[in-house]
Length: 178
Image (cartoon, rainbow, N blue to C red; front, side):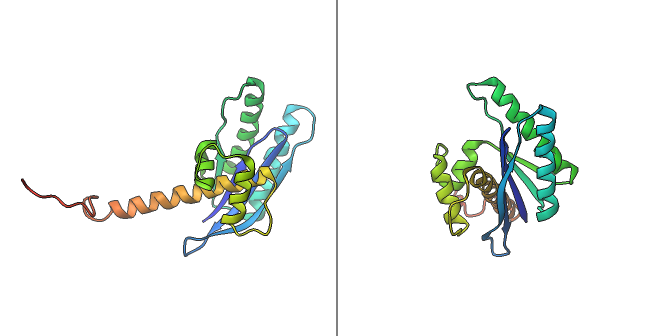
């Protein structure tokens, strides 16, 4: 599985691509940022869409994982973020990718081990988990963390499915009559 993680933004949209190897290990493929120029909203959203579409064509992911919008103090900022997020999702859907959505809390918990981690902690852990020579830029690190979150989530779903597929799903439990 090749996962494209997206950290949407109205000025910078981070992306990160990882591969899950046959042995379950995670392998870094690419990361970076789509920088959105100033201008009218429609043009900015087109930049997000075109950038994510190009990343999809270049790296051929099998799934897109994206951060959910959280309601910040500024409703206008949250709305713009949601629109950029929508443009990125549409690029994935138009390339027939399934889309998985995760909260910032879920992403940080998967990458760092705690949901309220600082950006520098996310960068550090992404570097360590993917064995990178240096910490990626903050938006790219957040996108890679999103991809890592999906990898862990997918592995957990497969493990549960495998366990539930055997017998009655009560593997390991012992019952005794009184």
